[in-house]
Image (spheres, rainbow, N blue to C red):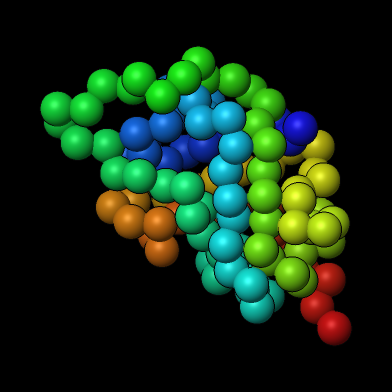
Length: 105
């Protein structure tokens, strides 16, 4: 499991910078920079929404489609800690894995 810190305030899963979803998916198959990745699990929080998806936790299972990231092993993130950024995101394309580290070929 990866320690996950999330600064995406508008995500329905974000509770005090922790994720209440038990697993997330990072997208950006051909990414070579962090801003070319995204949190595919992002769902925008609406005013009427309360978090009923689970308990926020520091460690989360992180799937990863960013093939060029040095932490990606068999589509799973093996970093000890990552950050998901996109403070005022309204859709997943406005988020990113701030910990992406390219092992570009």
